[in-house]
Image (cartoon, rainbow, N blue to C red; front, top):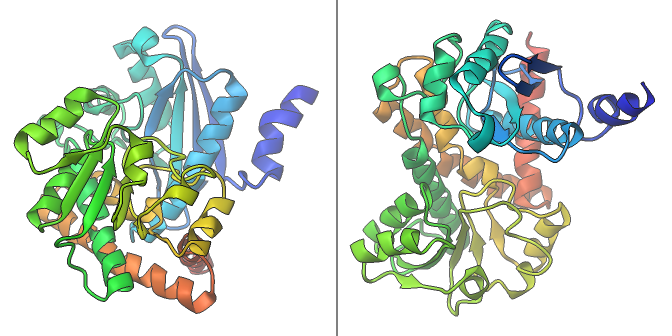
Length: 361
């Protein structure tokens, strides 16, 4: 009992990563399912967040991850103006090795047993086809295919939201939302990044890209020969004359090594958890680099999956995602007023919205 108390329960009840309403441990021996569902808050409505399928080194690491991710979804959904709280789920194991229809159905039954307190969707290791399977036994499933009543790939609106965040940053910093002739570096041109490039080019921005996958770079440059290519992220962030840096790949892109050499005046990208540690945002502020909080500007995807619950309408979703422009401006204004970095300002606004919702119950 001592090990459990010092591990999972301590994290849940005593750490800064805790404060969750409910954590459910799920096991189905027949299919091999081991999963954890974390509901951080239902103050604004049913918890909404994706399902991550990942080969964690141990169960404690999985629990720590799901608690952190669920908490992050509460803030993201609050700032996106959604009637949803924050939740997340992780399935422990290598999806390439153990993912089966039987396992996904078992997982879906666990989600369904919560009676709508948690609504699931795709995340790392899970895809639209997986959500179609889960939806067969769980009505509280989003991120499904259009053939099954869903919206399909959410990367289109995710990139649109990041683009709106960039426009807001330009308005705040330069007094004009236009990105024409601005030099923008995009690290990662996969599902979201390559759509972002399209928005930038359509407005007349100069674009520099990099990606660890040659085929991803080639897909962009074959379509748009004017796009410049940096050999790697280290070279991209040092690009002379860079106005905006858009991390659209892995988390932790802003760290003690990258921030001191970053040439851009704005950071606004689609990647989750861009700050390697909390002190990085102060480092950005000290260098007078404007940071658009990642969970605010990349909320287009969650706006889309939330809309599925009401009968998906793309134009309605796009109109909601366009409001990321106003939300980002609100955060910058609050940060200036309170004398804090934008991330802290966004947290304060989200916490205020959740507190007001709880008080109104």
